[in-house]
Image 1 (spheres, one colour):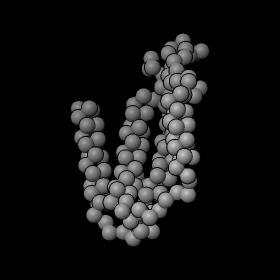
Image 2: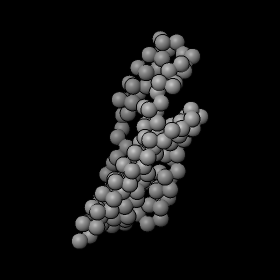
Image 3: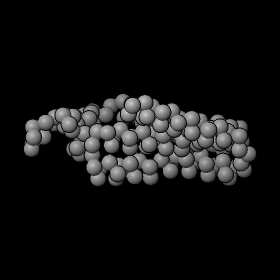
Length: 150
């Protein structure tokens, strides 16, 4: 029964996300509001992630991490979705805007950024042994995320 409740709740969140996206699709907004929605949607991603991390750090259990991750992902989906929808709808209004960067410099920055992204070196997800109970832990950046034996 627990899994059925979780599934129903996640489907309800998905339908709510689609409803918000549909609402954002049909709203006539001015250029300033569109720009604010596009930039604000991207910038407002950081508070839900930070809040989810703070809530998880108080009591790091596996089930709590799953629920926090669910809420954070739906919040990010709504924010990014609205920003992308408004950007795609209004892209013709911004066609005159160009960045004052030479094409050669832009291409060089894309190549450097892409190669840096591909060459990350050491993976951030590691497994370690717990000093207290000798269980396997999962770490990200040296911080305990989930005790795998719990």
